[in-house]
Picture 1 (cartoon, one colour):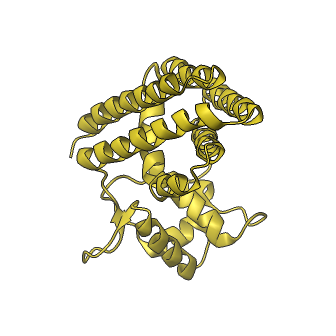
Picture 2 (picture 1 turned 90 degrees about the vertical axis):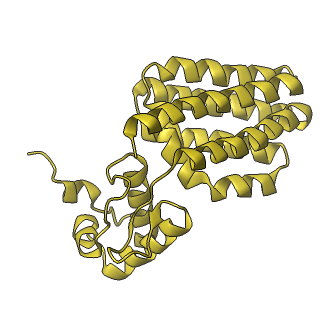
Picture 3 (picture 1 turned 120 degrees about the vertical axis):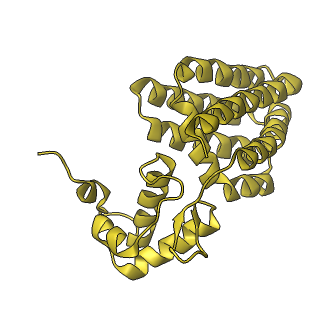
Length: 228
């Protein structure tokens, strides 16, 4: 028997806290398009689907609002935030600046162990791509960039990226599912990793920024296709 939508959203109580698990479930559901932009998020319905209390649902919705995934303030209550093309363009501009700088700095200063770790993390991302596990691709990609920034000694810059991470992953869910993206992404990330291994700061920065420009282009196309 096929699982109902409520069953598939039900929270596993065996790990972390209920609030953390509920937050992850809701964040993933918005990022993968289960809940559409502009869709009302009714507390009572979410309580039933997630099998958690209304107080937890309210906490999670408030947290998602701080991440830019939920909007409130209208009479209809909380809704899934709409990510505009202009907002996406700004996010990618910030990514290009920060990730390019991180790649350059890591090529200059990263230890051999750090570079090796980044190679391993990228390999895990590409393995997830080959399996078609797009959720795992996003998890592994985030891990790669966290390591890149931290190995470059740019913990504060990573905090800035983290503040946008929910919206970055929402856009990433759009781009990684694009036709032919797996091979293209593999080639782009290979350029970054190879430049890091060669200790070529300029090439690392350029490869990183070229990657961001390409995903920005894909995201813009997919947002146009989705319409207003």
